[in-house]
Image (cartoon, rainbow, N blue to C red; front, top):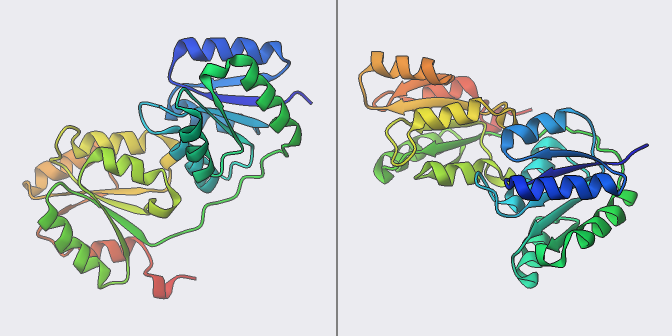
Length: 257
């Protein structure tokens, strides 16, 4: 059976070079340059090796590697590919238990050699369902508001993760230890607003299963319209009893089965 390799890199030039080289080496190659393409690629069948560029625009390659293993059940060897210095690259790879790493300065032949070595040892992936959690992420640039909601929900037995920006929230949802079941998302956020972030989550099957609830102090009818337009699972005015809504969505730890 022809061994399949997934390449994840945001550079069109790099993808083209690696595609040609790996195909020439006898591999079936699938390319992805963003998270949406990664999701589609994983749905196409098992892979024997995955090559990930360490510096991606939506996330870091090592975070993505960890997310694919923990959330998507990926068992194929992961190879981090970067122009970082060798020591830093090895440290990043070791931190997420990547199977290997190759410095771009070593050239494409070094990458092909590593892929061949690891792909030969690989077993076909056996996807596993991610474990359920009772984790809620509060995304709000107001520290006071976030702390008040956090205290209320912690009293109900939920694990709370705080993010004061969309950038930080994006990094957190990729990691198993900080990936939530539900996000309480402020609408008026700096740089990227909550509605835009909600569309990003709902438009990417990598984040399937994460519920998003908009949380704002704006007029209820307006908040309802924004929630519907961006595909949110619900909305809650900030002055509402937030934990009551959350309790209806996620089973507390002491009741989990």
